[in-house]
Length: 510
Length: 70
Image 1 (tube, rainbow over the protein chains, first blue to last red):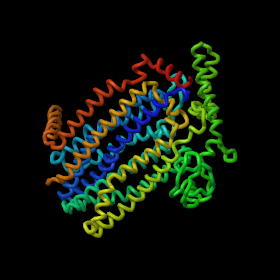
Image 2 (cartoon, chains in turn blue, yellow):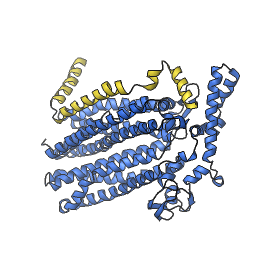
Image 3 (cartoon, chains in turn brown, blue):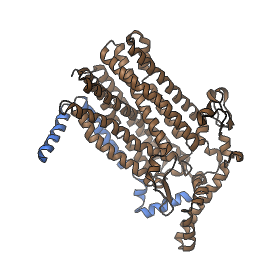
């Protein structure tokens, strides 16, 4: 089937989705993180009664509002794309995707229409405590909204809690909790929202550093930095921890992605972690600088453990009970054939064959030995199972490297705040200001690891991307790609210019 | 009592919108953005492929199964 699909259609559809998701993710993380920082700042205000903290909270709240307003509904376009460009996928996932997205819609609606309004309009109209509760609810609401989207994404990486119905060609949810609490969902949610917390902390530190460089708003900046440094240090450490958990979950459930991330072609015991090297799509990494045994330790807490390589997954490894890709492809083709025969039997009213084939879809043995590889049946070449190795390898290192940089940055800022030496090292203030784009870069790199690294799958092992796409005109997808590029770029320019204007005005008196 | 409460909520929003400064620009951007998204993009560029090409779920299932097995 794959060879019959217009690859330019698949590529443009992927490019369009990637563009939309990447732009959407520019707006979302600041909302996730800044909402909690507002809540902390306002809590200090309510506890101390010091109006300076109200002034601080209100300033960052305006920047939160700008980001929220420009970013709101940018994710809806992704849903448009599911219905138009990814109709096979949308149908196949059934209510698995629909339920979390519906819950997200309800959460978002209630949060946006009530608590955000109270947070912005309620100053001096309701009690301090009620206002504070609203601010906290905005923070929890925003992050819970993200939970449902990330649960849906995690299901694509690790399908769980569902059963395929051959009559409707849809997956039906049989266990909501398996979907919600799958290891992939938990780690993805924690790691992703934490990256938003870190981004917001860097943002607050960077903007505050600009005020200090301009010798404006000294007390305001120091207080803002103190909150951001504490919040940032704690969350960046947690980010590293959740990243470690995520990585080991990927090694278990998406071993090809994990091997591509490490550009590990040949599986090995006592695998080292490559700090630097020139990765290749087909060959071992050259000019490698590695820390011996570290990859094995990070993956299995054992320096001598065997780490699976790309070739193990392609050729199989009998000694370790691993099936070859060719065998999985054969089993996938068998599963597709059963579905095809079942459909033909229904059409021909051949009740005996229909009943026999229908029973297979409820048979745990068929599920485990054949249907589990359904998606492989669309592939002809095992090499197509390997994602873009160099891109995944480098994206991972950019993300991890920046993650550790943020831990150091927050520690340094906190130390400077505690020692009251913030204004004495201007180069550090410049470094803080210039660090603002870095967590955005790290976040995008993380999503590249997650999404490029899981190719060729739209739904891991069940549906390849090329089979998920709608049979529409590639030209139409190109047009909307450029339309989105123009719209999102305009929105980004609007966001930056409004924010810069607001920052230059500085905090207002209360 | 209920009408009083509703009036209070109404006034809360009206006063809030009136006192906005940068918020007015933002609401304008939100309005334009939503118009482009729903009245232009969704309407002209993003019809639901299965809903617009097939009349009912049974036909949609048939089509997707055909796509998955051809």
